[in-house]
Image 1 (tube, rainbow, N blue to C red):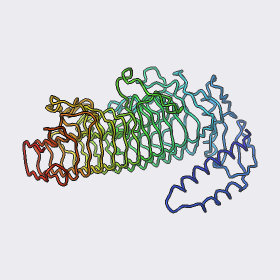
Image 2: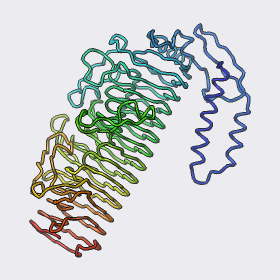
Image 3: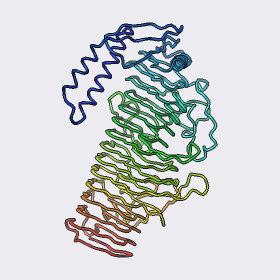
Length: 551
């Protein structure tokens, strides 16, 4: 394929993508198509940079989406054969593009063995069909991790960016696009002790970022790590990886959509707000939509479409693969929306604020889950305080969760909503939720009092077996449940709900399966409780009780 044909193909791909996006919006119909046709027929001229500094002009039948100058990495010495380190040539192409004001750095089909690729402002990396960037296993191919005097407040991987396959700091207008593959073959998923790269893409304090259409295989500690960035779009990625899929921290105005992430050994899509920048910065104005997350498939088999199940006994008994807020949470979270997502063979939704930040105004809706290996819904306020000395306990307020459908949830871990003594979670609303648990809980388990673990790591499995099979609610002020359906597949001797140290709890239209003689609700130290219109449960008002059983 010559350059003219390649650019023509790239443009048609983008036109079709944009056309489908427009057609999916209400009020847009087929008359949009003539506009696309006119664009396809419009003549244009494309300028292609040569490694000797000269420019070649190609007449094209289309207006290329790769506007401006296109810098082909092969023109700068990249072999694309997978045996020679191509990152020096790739970086040379990026530097030349930046020197001329920016442009598109093009990876034609081929295998590009690479160490650190250093992004610059106004640069697009475009990975063509058949193009693979493969991470070298040679430590000398990577830039050294820069010092960070705040590294004690978050894991090593969160504290450094330059020791990555692709990295950028303090940049603007950068994109990574195209249907190619980034294979982190030589990256480590562990703490970097030998200088080997540990992340696929790492960006800090960058502005106007687009990542779209490419794939990541074996992404190292993080497939994507963002800290302090704003105006970010992440769309239509497939990440099949050996640790976190993407960690988005201390960012503003971020849109994550249409992504598939399989991450058996860690979380899939995570929002964080660590202290890595040296100051508290919340993660705000984020949408996560139309994504599929999983943790139950062998790495690489989601990418190749074979979906081979992992051996759970061999692989620690579970796969993580979830959507999560936390654990690092110094700066807090505000204005977050998560909708239209699928959880498959992984852990459930986790909402955690344990490092002194404020988690406020979170909306989660239209979520389906199957084969969930721990708590389906986990909301945790704690005081781990991995933060500078004197940081106060944080807060969680105004969380709205609706239209959740869960099948085959772990029998030991009910959904948990828990603050800590003197620090309540506030104003939670949960509606239109259906959960089918595996069941099998015993009378002995029904007597358990879960430990507080106020300063511990906020993992739901660390609480052990839970004495209720449906929801365990503790240290909460202001909570409402409406239209809740709870069932189990195997007889369970635990009550559906336990409330402990809860104020202002309202329940409507609750349908919870319970075994004969087992209570629907157990209330401990509860004030202002009510339940209405809930089948066999009588309408009940409780002003104040230290202990009450509702059958």
